[in-house]
Amino acid sequence: MKNAVKIPLSRVLAEVCSPGSVFDLAYRKTDGTYGEKKGCLSTPSKSSLTDRRKLNRSGLLQLTQKGFSGIPFNLYIDLLISFNGQVIDHEA
Image (tube, rainbow, N blue to C red; front, side, top):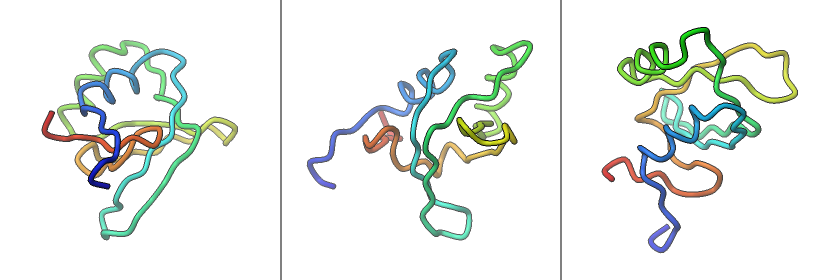
């Protein structure tokens, strides 16, 4: 992964929060194992800016998967590895 294309975390968060954005994420689970979610959507909310700030401050993204039952799930922002195949740069 030395030469892997990297994307800044700030750009990932901006794209995740864009209305209608569909994306794939790879992440570490809290037990250290690898996880992957395809066709993710940001969970819509009534006051998206306020809720988005709360989620980012809590360190969690609330998402659903396209084509599934719409049950929301949370991912820790600090444990995200890649966004649409691009390695996430947490320090940029």
